[in-house]
Length: 135
Image (cartoon, rainbow, N blue to C red; front, side, top):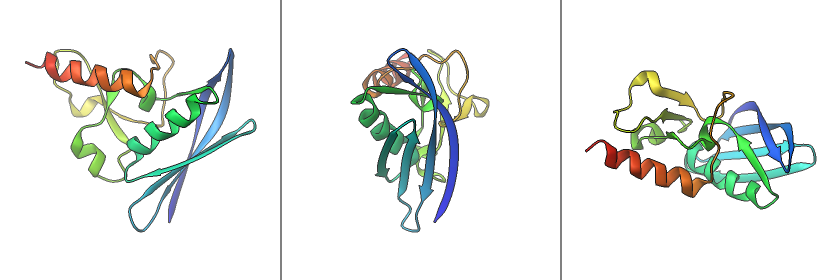
């Protein structure tokens, strides 16, 4: 088993806190994410990191908290290839009408200040609109 840890910001009500996401990669190629911090402990598994993060975001929304990272941003989404390569922790920053480039790749657990954080369904809808914008 390989593990990585990321410190991310989470939004709870009107309070912004820091939490830790532990990413465990198992020999069977499954990915487990554990979110912990400030009395929060959530755990999910999937076959790639992006899908696991989506599950984690859905579970976190029930508390309710929001994860503030690239993987939660409106304009970030993985390609099929990026999901299947490695653990699936890379995705593209998308721009309407523009094909993504290697320079647009981000780590889904990293962050920047001006991310527009949305629900998984809103993110998926934006991705479909982006595909359609490529004509």
